[in-house]
Image 1: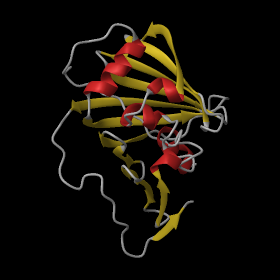
Image 2: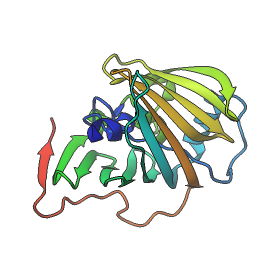
Image 3: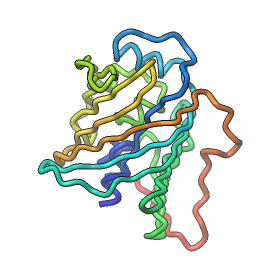
Length: 221
């Protein structure tokens, strides 16, 4: 069940990162002019925030309302395609992309799964938040009514094998603040992002990953 929760973000990352889940909400002071509607705000974010750090919480609920244990952790990203999604509680898991390869590390299983970036985040929420490609090429984007003080949009993947049905993104001041992803199993993963720092100076090697000694590395084709 851990893999389903962690991968919904990066591989749809659901079907692509073995049902892992990642997401990202940014609530820092704005560093650019605010756009009006939610789709325009998301494009503004993609164009003007080239790197970021922050905290996240996420929880997956099934179609009957049953919920898994909430997860929390921290993230960092740098466009195009570099990111770190680190679950700290209730257990540790890590997804790191260096822009070419994506590594999913599960310390409990002593296993690393390695995939090419284009196999993992092509048409996924990670592509929306961390990529640099055209949003409209991979997704059909529609504006939704505002709620909870946020402006909302729905991104529906154009690819039939994306691993999720759609992701709703709530934004404020051109920064994403909440994601609600409906996957192919009828589960909804809700991600809250906070303490966002936009365009920080990141340390060298922030997105490099070296498997610890004694860990199995599984390379996916």
